[in-house]
Length: 95
Length: 132
Length: 96
Image: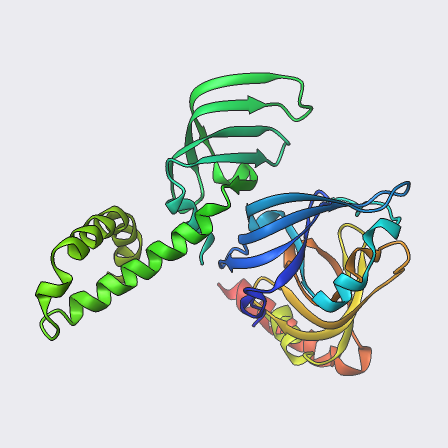
């Protein structure tokens, strides 16, 4: 059974259908994959400049907007220097 | 912590709601249901491009059109605190005849009573309804 | 239910999931549910240079509704069995 139980209280990366990438601590979830993220930050990627992190605070994201939830390896994430990363934003979902 | 519990606890708190079409609604939560349909009051609506604004006294938003909601950071701790208090109240109510009711009565009892009443109807309506 | 059952037999196999946003992720299938949501371990994003977003992610949950394709290991899928099971289910459906 694919459940989100293992991610509770862990730092996760959420990719949304519009291509947004949000990192935060997963405080809770439900059967429809609605997710509560605390201490969340949006990571905006661009080809010209490094990653911009926008603090968002407490966030409730609707499950139907979620593409993927990744468990962040905090040590690995800390070692990455976001200002050096150049990348296109993630493409949005199209059906 | 269920997302719907967080939302129910956010009644009367300010929040930002973004819809799938990019419109944003800033207002105070009046009510919500299991589908995450919500009513807000004192709302500032902005269109997706951010160049048109409306002020609405009240509005109803269908849950299925919501992309996400932003709520005050303090809400998470407030809800956890209330859930703990409700759990303590349940525990003490069950063990009341064992330990001195006098101790739990008085100021402590009064607070819990009010707290339980606030959370009671909401939780009772949802949880107990399903149990039945 | 049938495809759900197929996935259940493929746990611990390496699969590649292509999403509707064109992202391709390879990983070990850890679990699947009735909505065909997928849990992958030890993931590698195809074309990592273009998608450094998931550098620090080793395992993930993918919502079934955003999956376009799942590439399965051919040696672990019994297509004959699958065909028979499908025909049986279709027949049962028609009877109803």
